[in-house]
Image (cartoon, rainbow, N blue to C red; front, side):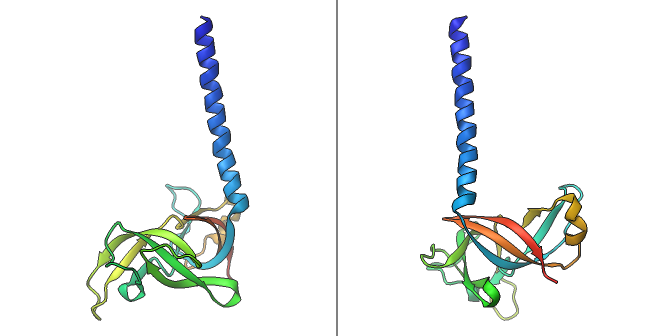
Length: 172
């Protein structure tokens, strides 16, 4: 009986330590990540099945191969880096996409979802998948954000290859 209690106590302690390390990791990221801002547009702000999330669209969601500066040809499911440059009014704008991690630029780690070869000018369209397309909006603020084609200033937090949406602000 005593052995079972010791095992139960040990397993509970391990779970507690894992929970604390997970919370510590999240808090450390939020405290040490560098913020920067980009512009976005809403697609369909409310999806009833998913709750109150703003569905965000960025200028780098669909790019052509002319914006590709990778060492190899782009392929579906390939990891890519969306490189951003600082524009006017402190907003970062899409610069180019590449398959190598930039050393001295802001970037978003993403993946090529699809490649389409049907452009009239002979260029190829790359559809980019990233984790920045949804942001939870509290119910009290939904009227402010629930407008079709609403433009936002999105504050992102980035550390290494991890980038998350911190906040949204509507453009007037």
